[in-house]
Length: 262
Image 1 (cartoon, helix red, strand yellow):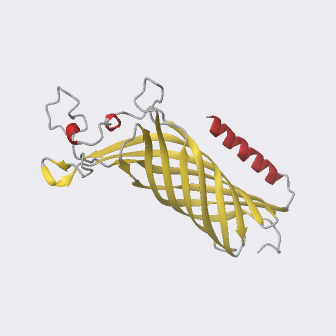
Image 2: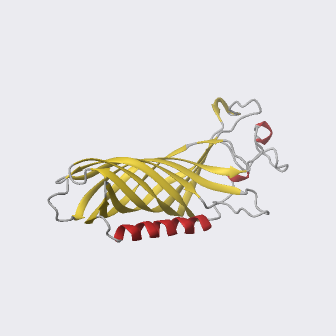
Image 3: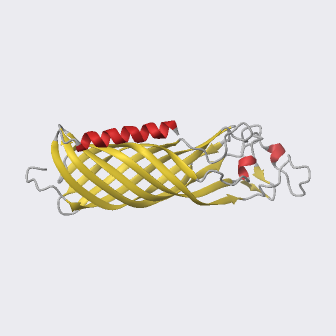
């Protein structure tokens, strides 16, 4: 939480500095849509072997440009997105080989937890290049909050049956797995509010008549945990890490009247 407060404080001073108007005045408001692909995992401690889970993300974007300071174009970007995130477990045996499904040895055990979140990033933006016609490079940095909506488990075995359950009557895989950490397979999400820091970089092509087209790579580091992290809880950490590739289209609602802007 202290990190989140520090991030908001940084963004507050950054925005305040931009509105101080020490550079060339701008008053541009653009809105539009975004969409892309997100690769996510959860940093569990105790560690859970896993790989990136692929999903989609998309939503609405608004950008306010307030100033050009020397060669830097200063703006604030806000988004409202739906995102499919979660984790994809690597279920391996003690020889680090995939564990086969006993009913069909040609298939390996599979477990995915897919979660839907509403994500709201509020990002400071610095750009360099053309504003109205041509190419511009930019970076994003700022806090992001998220709200859990629902989740879905995709598994080809009964996650409630394992070798650590003496009363189990089904086929048991727990003794075959190299990792004995299986609690996350059945635990419901406890903390439905997520928060963290997002940073990104990309390119924007602008046309005075057609609008703004952007492609961006972004990384999100979660500071919150999806499960409790007290000494009584199973995991001491369970935070998200997301890699996002997205495209955005914006059109101008308000545009600074200045014929010298290129």
